[in-house]
Length: 417
Image 1 (spheres, one colour):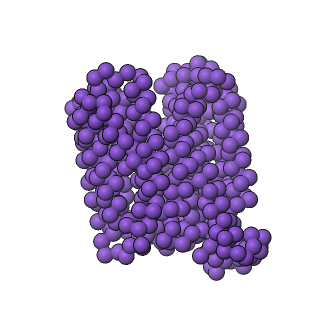
Image 2: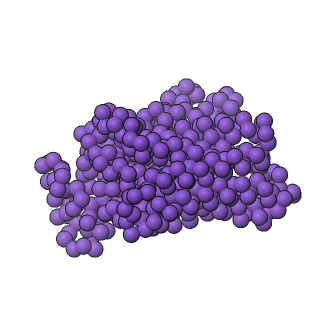
Image 3: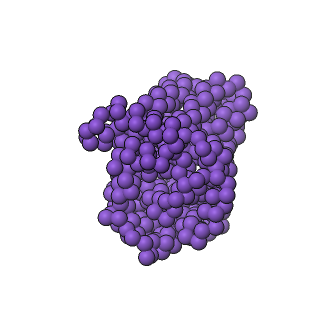
């Protein structure tokens, strides 16, 4: 099955005609059609890289923004908070508000929104305008993650969905690893505004490639407010969302405070901390690459094992903090486990709600955003009241519980592979 094969049969006439045009242009040979499919998937991966890079950039140049605009670093940091809050509010509803719009155009429009946001940030003479531009980015991020899974599900057959989402999430993993250090380096060299101009340029290139590589994509699963409501009442979806809250919330309640936790390791300096963070990032990238094929073959098994590994690694980090070597192993396992979580969650929702995919995906994105905020807040409260080690253990246990919950939704379901 190819992108064109999966789109044309159910498209309205004008979309089917567009698909036929793409098929003719790309040639009839299977290798050429397959190449067009994976170029489309790569275009979505570039979209993920662009929006996540823009999301994290303020953290890399926070002090420079604060000094230039004459505000405190704490206030400047709210640019990140505003993005997350807007993402939380818009993730489940965006697709429902434009139920008939070609998803190719919607995805390109969201990339364009990220482009506009970066340009406005680069030009912003005041913090309020910068904050408004970050709200636009929140819409772009939430919309992208809500729509991209349904788009990929049209581009590839079901048994390759995990692999395709690995490609999309590779852009996210790369942005997570590279955005902050690269932004910090370039910000010190050129100033913070040129950094956002570069981000805008990357968004512009991605927009062009998306328009060139993505075929027309129909809305998936009759998106609409009624469908969203019906999806939110599904028992399986509710259990899965609760599980995601435990997994992501447990992770962020611990990872948000990884620096004070690492400071418990005897003799660990700034170089040692940097090493730990690099190891985590590289392991997360590898974990994402491995998660896709495993999700395609044994989804139920890895839905349990990845969060449990995350929980064991987080707990081990807390309990073996007197040994740098042991902490390094724990951080590598932690990164690998969490690196696969987004791909696993997206593959899971595609399996349990294939007919209401956009609505279900929007709910998953909303829960991730909520878990980030609540997990960080609860983790901070525990650090202040019961200590950093206990906080990490509680976060690890929460993640493991989430794994048990989400894997339970796979009982009785057929696993591809």
